[in-house]
Image 1 (cartoon, rainbow, N blue to C red):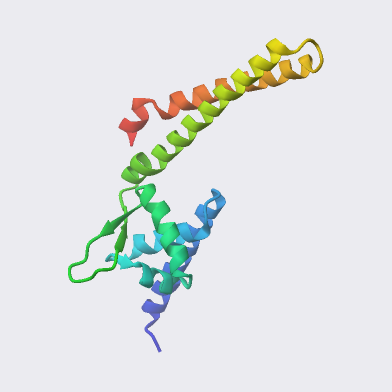
Image 2 (image 1 turned 60 degrees about the horizontal axis):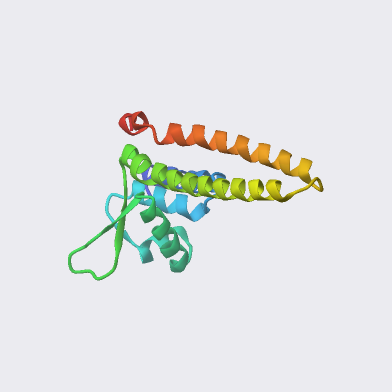
Length: 170
């Protein structure tokens, strides 16, 4: 029978990993992404894909895909382990770095893409307005106003997220 402390520690560790999964899932990302990050965050040494997959009871392919996403967000780092050809990973434990270099940067890129799409939509609507002679003109004006409002909101959010003070605070 395992010691009580070990059993409690394992149960707490499992809850933390599940909470990580639920958190990323609630933000619209895969559950495995959060579980992997939480597992690596708690693990005292880097882990390879096989060990992560085994620990979480998921496929190595799922782990590989999720690890790539976590790397893109700067949430995990690939670590070289002497004498082993496999890739090992460890979690970024500094949440300021994770937010500043990973998640915030990702949101900024998505916001830039959304801004480009709004520009294209606005140009298309303006062309349609200039060509319309009355049939559907009122509907186009409503759409144009809504796109204008979306652009204003986009502009405010962009100003907030690209403000140097945000980077300084992180």
